[in-house]
Amino acid sequence: MRHILLLGGTTEASALATALAARGERAVLSYAGRTEAPRAQAIPTRVGGFGGVEGLAAHMRREGVTHLVDATHPFAARISANAIAAAGSAGVPLLALTRPEWVEGPGDRWTRVGDTGEAVSRLGTEPMRVFLALGRQTIGDFTHAAQHFYLLRFVDAAEPAAFPNHRLVVDRGPFTLEGELTLLREHRIQVVVAKNAGGSGARAKLDAARELGLPVVMIDRPFIPPRPQVGSVAAVLDWLDHSVVRGV
Image 1 (cartoon, rainbow, N blue to C red):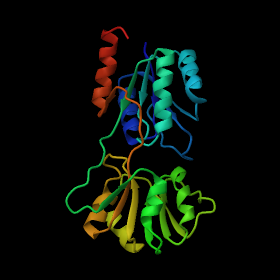
Image 2: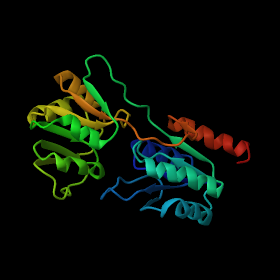
Image 3: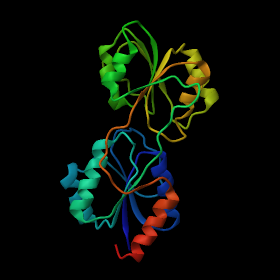
Image 4: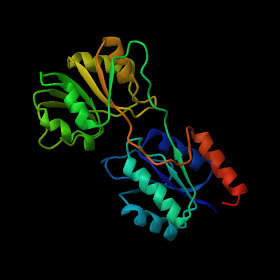
């Protein structure tokens, strides 16, 4: 019986976990361990890193993993690179479940940047009210621009250490256009900073920014080495079925 290791932490990973459970697959969903209260899943879970490439490869050999699916966040570049290398080392077939990038459309006012450091620079020196729609691990560079007010939104209530003038909202997507419009208006937001994560669950903030005429500083995705990838749960299931036919 095949044994699937699913690297997750995204809505796509949760949907795939549900589909795998419905088929009676032997599968484990692994979290990086950065969320205090991850959602309950339909398959067994583990929390924490593996210890780099060799640690992940050793884990897959020890546990008899036959298939590795990377459904991590598009900005989890190190985890994805480690997965590629570990799969090659352990001889385990790898498939990535990815989301298409968001694309700027009519009415959008995007400025695309390469990283958070460049995003800080784009905010300028004049005080602004900023919706910092980034994860907890990526906000550190903004401590150097303490003249701004920052609206933060995380899935858990732990306050960021030594962060300047800010308000923390605890909430978990998917979010609605009406809800995002209310959030931006209530906090008098002047600019949105976001990562190009893609997907539908977090798109509403960009639609709200467009409707309100607000500029968006959009951080491009990091480089991830080439790998096989698909864009749907159904395609992952098809890959699993056909990998058996090929004798993988």
